[in-house]
Image 1 (cartoon, rainbow, N blue to C red):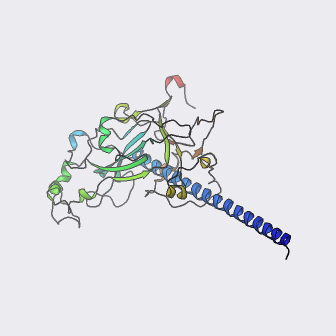
Image 2: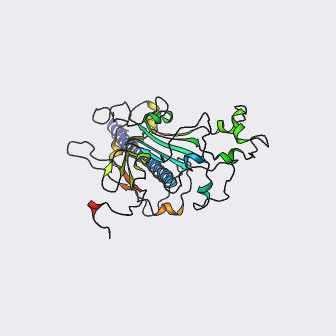
Image 3: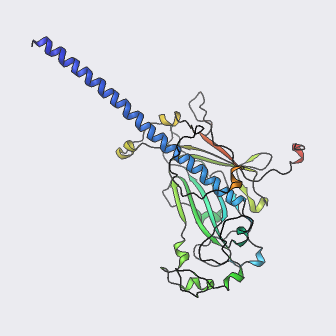
Length: 347
């Protein structure tokens, strides 16, 4: 072989290697993007279903008995809440009180039927969603420092220091009927014949209340979040059912999801936000849904008619800034039975 043939052969081999490497690189990027988008859609669907389930349980539950018919059990995990405070929220915080059936308490129904079981609920769960902005600069070099509107009574439910993103936590709240305190507690985790009123006398390792510590689900991928509450006439940034004496007509949840790819996370790098601008949702054709990140409770039949479908809403202005949230959905909570006078007569 002459020197010219060797050079030509080497050039052809090098060109083929470059083409193969380019194809492999393109395939790897597409694969990583697909994994990132699948992870994001999994988080979005799980988050939507979980908030919808929690709000539906609070919507279709009855409030606790009147103040003269209950006595609060003083426990370490108890959160003092006034009667009627089943839904309290701000732009970055949403708290609902939902009924909870726990094994071992008296008068527990055998099936979950709203017309019967809600009358015997003596244990409630306080479910709170709390979003904490990241201290890292966003795409445009500005700090994400959205103010957090929280009441002092929410201090027991705040997330642990250092957590950014969305946090969902569940804490038991007990409002037992005095008659139930006299009934005998039967539970395999406690000695037979023990009384509910004596439950705090048990050792810590045998006390079932200590096992019901608050559950925390942390979703750091939620880069922005906003709650709004519709009162029948306008959207508001805060709601307190204890003051308003009712639930809002609807709750709007708008948020952005940013999933960091695994390779950049291992290298300690912050990837670009190209995926944020190219995400799509396609579930109309019955696409396979991944396993939810949260442990979900199956919603009741009444919930299906009270929730609007998930929609995608992303707008980018001419200056390159986000002017709206990427994902936005509305949960119908309290039906608008009668319109205010300014709205006229409803058809």
